Length: 83
Image (cartoon, rainbow, N blue to C red; front, side, top):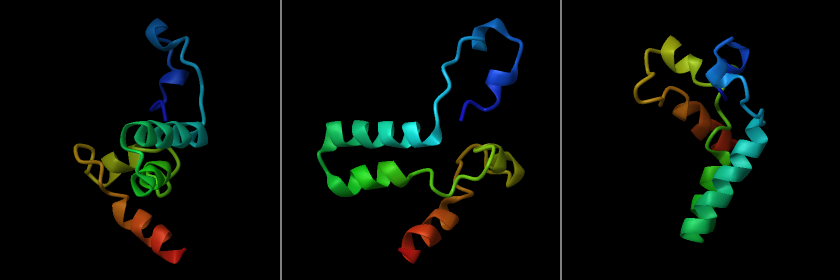
């Protein structure tokens, strides 16, 4: 989630507080609910990373989709539709 900066020697990144994808997703859902009070949008915020593979958005570079970051959207749709 931090794009590997926690492994760098740059001082700027030396005090990054680690957090999990779970904590990130819960935080996104809480922010969405705070501003919208919409259950559907809140669930969408909660599930927004479910198809993101290991090493997160590095896969977007692999798929040459680093600008839009949409390369995993189809996978996410499949996961949600499986219920």
